[in-house]
Image (cartoon, rainbow, N blue to C red; front, side, top):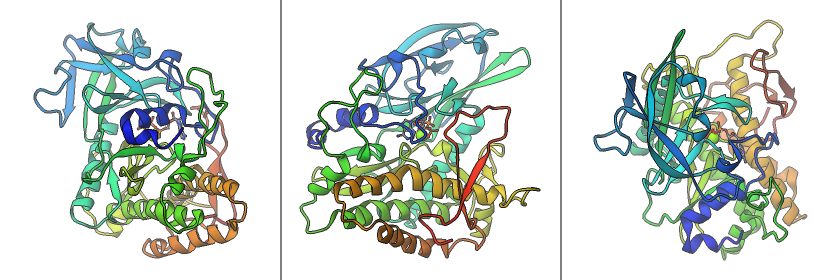
Length: 422
Ligand SMILES: Nc1ncnc2c1ncn2[C@@H]1O[C@H](COP(=O)(O)OP(=O)(O)OP(=O)(O)O)[C@@H](O)[C@H]1O
Ligand SMILES: [Mg+2]
């Protein structure tokens, strides 16, 4: 994809990057929604279903009067029609909403309403089925509230931004043994805070991915432009090396954002390549690092207490993270493991490592070890501010498999974290 496309058609180009400028998750697990609705298909759009229920309880989260979904309705992905969760209620289809899929498959974009609609999806997407019970909506709202607060109070770095995710609805569908909580989350289309110079969003994965033929099931396009990060570098018109550009303009701002969320908000972002974006102006300057998928972030309650931060005691069964003791037979506590997993694996292996590989391929003269060392040194200033035992000595990842829900996940431990001092 030629980066120039983003100048005249910023939204269309963003969607194109979401769909086709994406090698997919580094795990290479590529399952998605049904063909016609999946991001890799060549169908421009598809329709979500608006379902009206009789005698069902709903709970709304910050939905104002006149919101585009009537009060006794919920929106579902078309693949969910006739699912057994609807067996015990009366419902009818009352409307459809035209959307385009994003890389995650179950999050879609409605041009008409200028909003992202994140849907429940009951089959496995990536490694897991994607339910949206009430607590996940509460968590997304609470994380948005905390991050907005630290932005508004001037604590965060000047490039810190988020896509607000503080609106939603859940329907309580009766089952023969209780209720199924069927939720939907609405995510703003534009970053908060909004900068006057804002022009477009670019997902992190598309900085270093190949371009694929629409509808081809992962056949790379014959002609490949340079990776977007290389094109972005060439557009800078500055006397700077590519490694300095990537370090100073991309990786350092990304790390500032990751640690600001943690230190000022007690929020542990799931900062992998699909959840992080950059915002650019129309001269290709990087304005902001944008965090999305706030529902997937963790609330580190122990860290919030350590820093004396205020939080609401909601959704205590979902990513409400507390310090734990080391379990018998384990080297590290679950609490430490989570910190390594999110920083070393998700941020490190999904974003930083492929970015480095991409620029090393472009310029074989880059000293990778030195580059990694600069990142380690940079991170040190933040890690010093965290409790001493926040990170484990080693780092962990897990195998590229779809987890059997009945089995415990197994983590692999490795010496010498790549992007922090051990
Ligand atoms: N380049 C990529 N890196 C990681 N995940 C990707 C990538 N491309 C597609 N995906 C898919 O995106 C999803 C990532 O999961 P995650 O929980 O972060 O997102 P989500 O909650 O489904 O949606 P959203 O990020 O819109 O909130 C998975 O289904 C994964 O297969
Ligand atoms: Mg995501």
